[in-house]
Image (cartoon, rainbow, N blue to C red; front, side, top):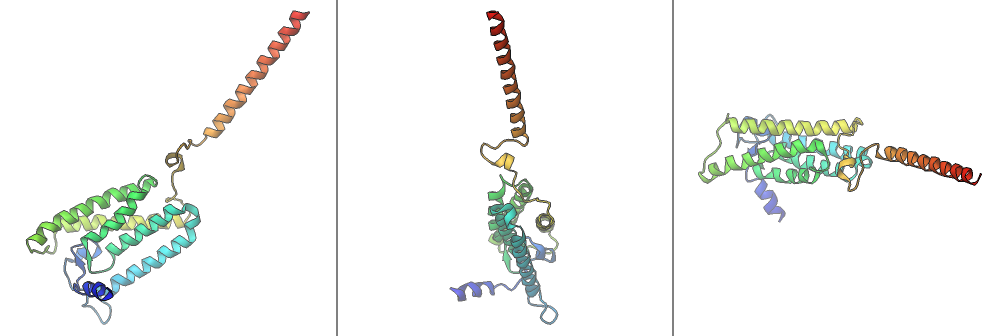
Length: 222
């Protein structure tokens, strides 16, 4: 199993295998083993993903008690998304796991909805644009504007997701759920205070009515 897994990975020593990611700006199917000394696109890509993984672990360690499961899901999303964007030898279909995590967070975290929409569109474009060319045994040429546009959107989405994580570390709680909208039977902020005021007014009204009834009863006896 390991031979097949790593053997398949080493079959295509290219920067991107039709994935519209960071490496797509330099063209498709470019060798990832040519560079200066040991500094090749292959090494750089995995070094960036390793740095991202360390950052995500630190992020979860520092903030896991703030947002619990949602924060863990966002951390999983950024790892899946980073795996699509950063290493070399990535296929276009590797974006699906990241979108699946966004789908789970869509009703809970407002700031992930734009990410979900953007990545769903770019993933569809990536699949639809590449498939006819593969069936015709053709390669995408360097400088293709569709590749550039989709890769630019994916890159902007990745940077935006990292900004959300940094904002959470700085205490801005951008990845905290909106409980007033997501909890079943939840009430809007200030509802408890309003109910307390209404209850107090009602009790006061009852007390006044009781006093009036007592006074009328005494007057009738006299």
